[in-house]
Length: 181
Image (cartoon, rainbow, N blue to C red; front, side, top):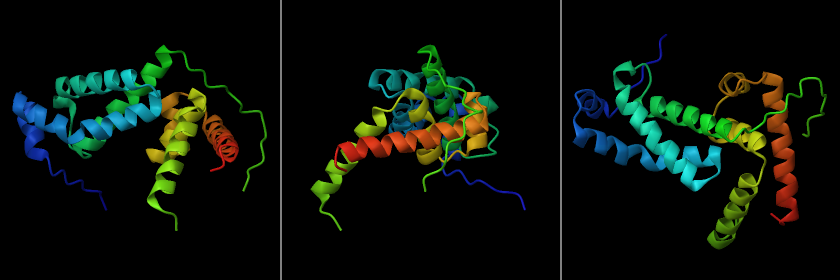
């Protein structure tokens, strides 16, 4: 059985294909905040995330003819933003250490203010992770990619992706414990 994607913004996308600026602006308003957050979680720098966002939308609108509708427009755009974010990191020369040969064992009702404080602590801890750890953790936990997809996107082995993820979790747990979260 084939998966069918229903895109509720198909008319806007068609208007974008025709070059209508108003439709492009509507698409931008619909997706900008979410795509900015995706970029920010990966590049961990507000100005760079804004640049990635603008370049991603420009790229999407310039290449909209290549959008075949096999997924929703939002998923297609998200992939563009993720790729642009990773390329931005590569420009910064983020290094992913290949650790295929290393065996590492696996480790196995609050009020809103407390919750907000903890969320901010977790965000800060994630942001303080080294780029390699943060990117793999973000792609896996927040963006829903599996290790095979991450290895393809980052051009690293699956084992490296798994190890980076595990180390990121351990480092994140350590940071959170130090902060009392």
